[in-house]
Length: 294
Image (cartoon, rainbow, N blue to C red; front, top):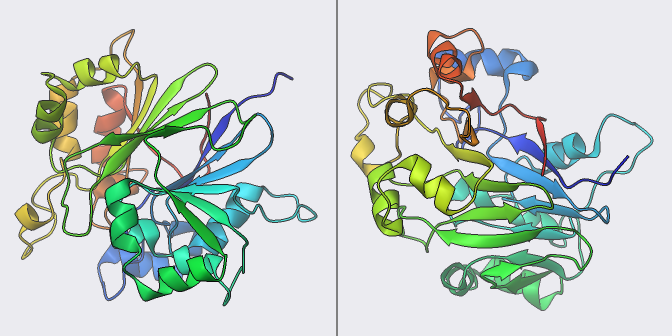
């Protein structure tokens, strides 16, 4: 079989996962009772042509996600990533980073790629400086890079407008031998993102980047699902708006899947009317352990 670059979905949820701490909603309560209903925070793994393993986002569920990535062969060792890439510094995307240090994995010189602004910001943390001093991690800033010489793909940071109280935010463009994949779990709005690229539509944006597969921000279904919360302070495009802008999938459109789903989002439920609506338009919802060949 021809070697392939394989992307595995390791987590689909918003930063807090499902169940979310302190939440008594039906979806979170059911997930407490049934492990099959749990959802890990958003993360993907990329396996290169050379067998190297490259993690994007490092969540609180790192242990479970590395086990998931390693497959079901009980004799197979758990994957240890050869590199980590981080899109931004909000909690769920970096919460597991301390597990690379002495108290848990005790790794040696693990390369962690992030933007220059985020590199400067995260090094202000005492725990991160300690991990660097003890040789557990190396922080690297590259706009476009190939994480290992023979992995067969490149990663590129694509700047995206999103809340910048801790640093900046990027999408990750993964260019494989056959396809290009855009990983964009967070943004403030489609209007802001499209304006930043000087394009007029989602299709024009994805065409300009030559995207074949897009995993995009699907945090909320609509603005009514969190009563009592001001969603203007946690801006994300809703799936309802996204499919309104996109309409029905056309023959030459890229495959678009929604990821980074809040615990309140009804598309988490496989039999929900909202999920069926997304699928009727030809789009999809990311599922943990899905694999994509690029």
